[in-house]
Image (cartoon, rainbow over all chains, first blue to last red; front, top):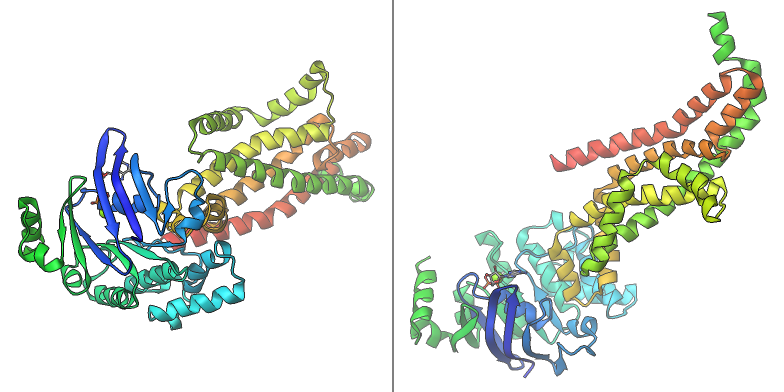
Length: 243
Length: 224
Ligand SMILES: Nc1ncnc2c1ncn2[C@@H]1O[C@H](COP(=O)(O)OP(=O)(O)O)[C@@H](O)[C@H]1O
Ligand SMILES: [Mg+2]
């Protein structure tokens, strides 16, 4: 297992947001996470790279105990790429600057090496010709692809996507999904929180449905979408398909 | 009219007083070059500390900033200069100015930088941390460059105030521009040296004022 999370609980003050989540993800697997807003999907992803510290439970990624005090978290995070709904690019840097910063400062590459690797990452997301553009000069879809390049440049073992297309105009969604598809085809292990059911059907190995801080049910996309066993899953899927 | 010119714009006295006044200018510039970086460093430490996760760090720092912003700098300076000797600590006027400015302008720079830091969306910090950058690296490469740029007009405006405030040094016998001009005035019985000081203050501050209003206009245009 690349990712192995066991009995994750997360409290925000009195709010109990994750109520005992287990999630194992195998190498090269694409796990697609769905669930109503506020069900804890983002929090779960953020617990995997310790942007949030679980109140209890254990998280191992690529053999590393993410919660152990002895773990060098900055080193461990290189293995876990993350893509956010709001891109979160650094606006004062070019696309290439965004992609190479961690290569230089975390992975310890020289500027020349980092530029080569960064340029290759931009190439993979189809933006080789935008390397010297600032985020403000790029469309939303292009910005999100730069964010993907920033993560994959570090050659992570797993990629986390938190609603990567939710902030995009509909006509720009396709370009981001295409990059995610090609990443998947290259064998990347991925955990994707999204509402793009078409993508899930085509690319996911497993769909996980979360509600109220728990995984309610999971299985192959066809099974979850056509024959959900739980009433809550059925209601949720019915709701998003009507949209 | 003739008397006016004699009292305020006397060319002979101006020539004679020039070396004294210029020595003062040199000290004013040196003092500014000391006091501005000192205040900026103090302010940066305060601004970063104010973002600490630990209330025991955050809380005293915020109280500190409030206290020194409320404390009139002249009173602070006199207190240090006239008060510390009673505690057996005799610092020169220059050292007192340095300390007082560190405390006073550090608090102001701190508030400005804190606002700048808070203007950076937290998502960028999370993205940086998710790639393995440490807290310090994230602050250095992501937060501060943008924060400083966002509050550059305020920083510059505060710097302008700081340079003006160096004239307080005259109260504790630091031979800066105003002090030297007054010395020259008292020996010549003529106001010309003071006018010279005023003109010099204007000449060194006016470019900063111009720069500031350009920055402010640019900020307005950027927002609009
Ligand atoms: N930093 C936080 N502080 C307090 N509450 C939070 C925080 N982050 C998330 N929550 C709460 O946790 C719940 C789950 O949020 P989230 O994981 O973002 O859900 P989802 O991504 O499924 O919409 C929500 O009720 C949200 O308000
Ligand atoms: Mg979410």
